[in-house]
Amino acid sequence: MNYQMNNLPERAVKPRNSGITMVMDKGLSLRQVEDFIDVAGTHTDIVKLGWATSFVTPKLQEKLDIYRSAGIPVYFGGTLFEAFLIRNQFDDYCRILDKYKMEYVEVSDGSIEIEHEVKCEYIQKLSKLVTVISEVGSKDVQKIFAPYKWIKLMKAEIEAGSWKVIAEARESGNVGIYRDSGEVRQGLVDEILTQIPEETIIWEAPQKAQQVWFIKLIGANVNLGNIAPAEVIPLETLRLGIRSDTFDHFL
Image (cartoon, rainbow, N blue to C red; front, side):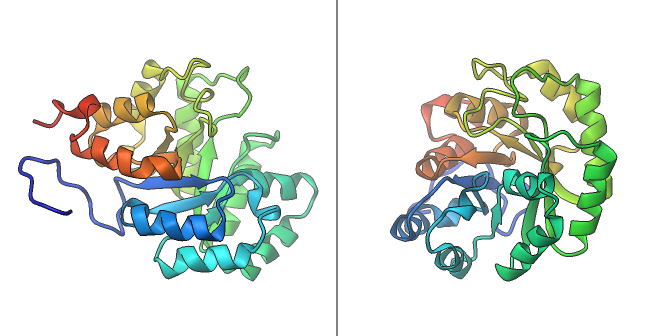
């Protein structure tokens, strides 16, 4: 920090297990990545190359190298895993992970239908090779899971080897744990937290109001994901209670 300020909430130190800020890169250029790291790298824990953007991203290896040189882990979005899986190319997917020396992978089923036991088998296989982040919830706004099902799925995926489980919301923040208006399904979140340790969950929260809600519920060190690159610094001020939305919360 640039100067001393008293009575701020204590932030976990990188590399951290809680208080994670996962950033969504939807197609930044190499220069934009360099600028982003210069400004917000200190506050960024991990970067997701959204859905299957890595397939069409120019100079992909160079981009990965820039993130890694800054000590920021990168992984491909779960939709890429699903795109390979539905084409019966799981082995090809593993070769892609090896080619690009990926240390993290996302396993999801938000766009395809797959038996959950089978999904957990893929988590088990991949967790022997890389750190797995799995995602629970559908990208289909019509599919609304009951709280007991969210809990059951999350528990099974953690037991299968997931380091963290992501609560689905898409990059828009209007499905899964949110209503189509973007409002948090509060009862659902409360139920999940009765059974799943909060440090094991990354809550996708692309909208400021969603970030504020989770910070007030869980604290400065809540794990938040799908954060836009330009929103990392603003999010950090929310976490520290030095933005009006959380100004009184930590005093």
